[in-house]
Every structure is written in C-alpha cells, then in structure tokens.
Length: 271
Image (tube, rainbow, N blue to C red; front, side, top):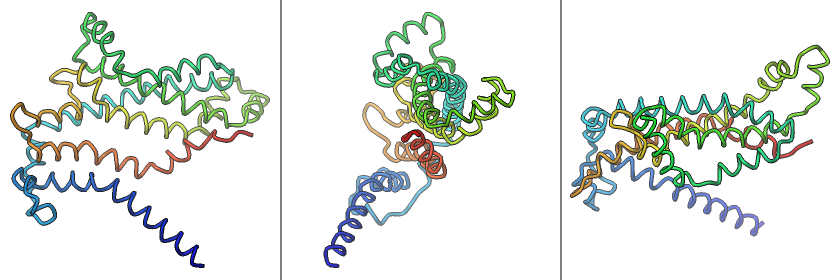
C-alpha cells in the first residue's frame, strides 16, 4: 500500500511539474500583455498589478493587426485546402499501389530543412515577379503542409481494410468511385487531423513569410517584429501580439484534439 501511495504521489507531482513548466511561459506572456512596459520590468509587480488593455488596442488598431490576421487566415486556409486536394489522392495511390520510392521522396521532403530552399525560391520567384504576393506564400507553405498530409494519410490508408473497396467494386463501383464513396468518407478523421496540423504549421510559419512576403501580405508571425525596434523593444505590445497569434491555435488544438489523436493513431497497427 505504501509503495502504491508513494507512486501515485510521485506521478501527481511529476504531472504538476510538467504542467506548470508548460503553462508558465504562456501565463507570463498573457500577464505581460496586460501590463505597461514599466510594470513588466518591475519585479514587485510580477503577480499584483493593474491590468491595462492598451497593448491590445495598440495591436488591433494602431498596428493594423486585423489585416495581418486576415493575411494569416487566407494563407493558412488556402495552403491547407490545396495540400489536402493534392495530398489525399497522392497518399491513397502510394498506399494502395505500394509506391515505396515515392513515399521515400515525401519523407525526404519532410526532412530537408526549409531554410536550404529559401535562396533558390527567392531567386526563382523574384524572376517570376511573384515575391511579395500571396501566391508565393501559399506555395511555400504547401512545402510544409503537403508532405505532412501525405505522410499522415498514408498511415491512415494503410490501416484501412482493402476488402471494403473490393466489395464496393463487386457492387458495380469503379476504383475511383469506391475511393470517393467508401474510402474518402471513412478517412474523415485522418483528413481532419492532417488539415488541422497543416493549418497550424502554416499559421505559425515565420521563415518563409519573412523572406517572401511584402508589406501588404505580412502574416502575424512576421508582423510581430513591428514591436522590435533598433533601440528598444515594446514588450507589452510584443506580448499582446504573441497572444493574438497563440490563443486561436491553442483553441483549435483544444477543441480538435479528439480528431488529432484518432487520426495520428490510425494506421499504427495493421490487420
């Protein structure tokens, strides 16, 4: 009994430490976004302070962050939808026809650092007069989203019984019809998982948008740098902008965690 009680106490303590370690930076970020710059530097007001909404007013009004939010939403939504439209059929083909070499190429695309492609992309897209527009941002974000979609959906299709499609074809459906009417509806959790993760990666992407975006197409992660000056940093505005970037993604992940878990574990076992 004592050993069991000690183990439970240790487990609870370990969980508390992990949760506190993960939440403390977020709590500090939100608290700092409600302080003035003077209060942020004042350690005596770390816990007790008079909250202010000036930082959020500065972010949403003066810094024109509504435009940056819409830019991030458009780029993340468009790149995610295009990645799903291309990635789901590609993953199905690779899974059903055992295209191991193609799957290896997709895996390599996941491994290659994106920074190694920035210079060639900038050179090519600048010659095509596309740098600074939404097209180049969407295409560059698809470099992250498309391999992710293919990688997740391949595991999902591998774990789906082939007999379902064979039965549908016996009933008169073509292979494409069986995919559209049988396989695709059953793979909704996997598609939801891939779409959510692709959207999150696109929303948080900083490197591609920093190099390839223009003044009118900045996304939120890049726009945060407006609060970093040469001589000083507006920590209050910076924390408020970071909160605006982080909170929507946290809410999406919180409400969609059921689909994410089920989609990631599907295909882990086969048979």
